[in-house]
Length: 175
Figure (cartoon, rainbow, N blue to C red):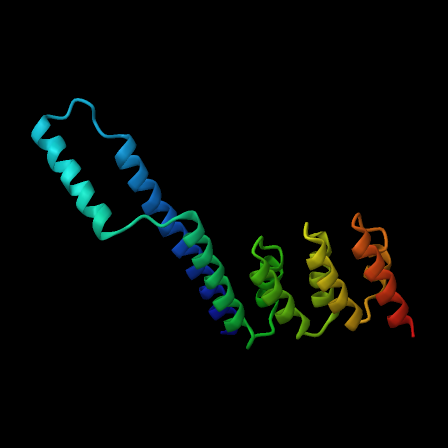
């Protein structure tokens, strides 16, 4: 039952994104594919209709869409706090790879609260992130979980600050 709720939340996020893109693309196509040979009265009516649609429903910018998408992820992550099943863990691991820093952090925090080797492995996937600061955050969670192997591997990270933090954490976990 709980995995169905998580799946439903994820599906809802995907449906909202698909509906947005569908509406956005339809609006773009209607402007681009306007028939060139339409009679003047029909063309004038179409332009008036398009103008009224634009006034009643302003186009959503990419930034606004990204904000809404991130907010939907954050709500979904918050809703997943109650569940401890594989589908929830998988969804959180997916969010851990998101390009939005807030979404990644929320997913990392949610996964950090779970127990188990599988969850530790999922958290370790965050070490592949492009952002060195986020990789350091992942290392700190892995250190708390006692994942010495991930800390050892991170000592060869391309970013110096990640390598240094991995070495420091490895020393503190070893004590």
